[in-house]
Length: 169
Image (tube, rainbow, N blue to C red; front, side):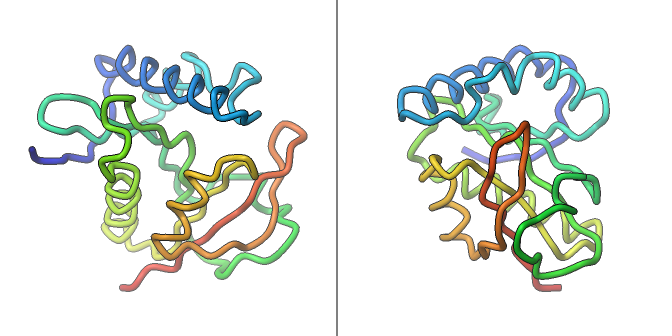
């Protein structure tokens, strides 16, 4: 089936929230503290969609994944303990989640590749992201895709591993 990456609509919110709830439970089952503090929540998804920064990956007619894609706007990244690879325009990726039924099918990689294509379409050649230290699946995805560890950033009082990938033009 064909994969499509597109801006989320209000109609997509229930499916997006269901995917995020699955991901929250997976993080908990894995013993992770990530997403165990009431974030993300449905209001965050509604805000993402309203701002036009929520994106879905569909497989056929089914929403298989979700992420927020933000251009040049992550205040926490200015305070990195470490050093970013670049200082110009960048895309930020937050809230990457894949639906339970699609886990293990390479869709996190496909979603990140789609984000990179989106960045290039905006003539932006840096993608920055972060994840908890106790999220080995996302860390592995970043490393497989060529993201480089740049240091630590802090969200809600907690250190996160920060990554950046410089894209080819």
